[in-house]
Length: 314
Image (cartoon, rainbow, N blue to C red; front, side, top):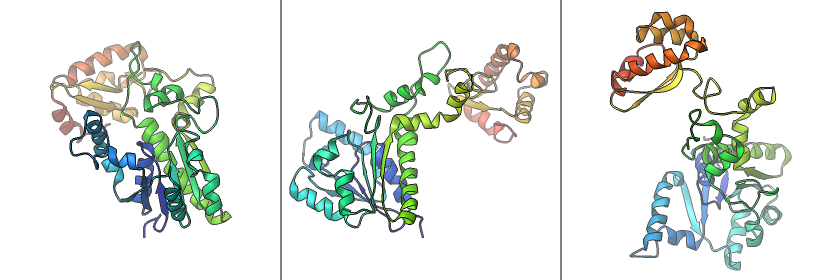
């Protein structure tokens, strides 16, 4: 039996964080029903034999999100109409979770907000996803993953010293800081319901989720260190033994030899046993980095991988 078997989820969300959250819930056995609006259905090409350029792009977006729709059923409901609202209210009667990702205030105007739904079903766990939370000065600001990680301080810590920040895939705010956090929050709220008999409301901001992921870096700053920035720590490219190196075919190999025994094994592989006691000698790091860069450029990525996977190093 799956952990969430028997749990019914109504998913009102559209963009990546919500569908990713309910994908995780469905992977653990939850019965997820996507509640889609008529316009959302049209955007997937259901109503146009020859869609225009905008419709084609909308369909492409949906195809990219298809993986997030696995293990789910869907229903089209127009929540702007009374008949649609009544259908949704009926679904809420025996649902366990409602998840939405609209801008703050939208579900209130539609009449499908937590206060309304909880009167129908006091055991409901209702989760709202947004960029900056349901209240506060930024609540109505629009944004995407790049904006949320910038506001939280993560974007400024990614990249090379002296260069502009590197833009990661939209995994930090959308998927880790929001989608995964939302799934965890819903699961813990369901556990709390077992003790209290009542559901609860979850207000999850993507920017807050990213800041949560920065807990270790921020704690060091608050203890008297520096703010997270590119190349300032062992895990952001400060040291040559934790870096990325180009290979002969234009590929790259990642190196994570933080521990002394891994570093010593690497020194054996690159033929520089004299580097073994110098792992943390910062004045020698430029020399070490240059040697590693020249060495890794001598073979292809796959050739290095085949050799290194047989060696006790990261």
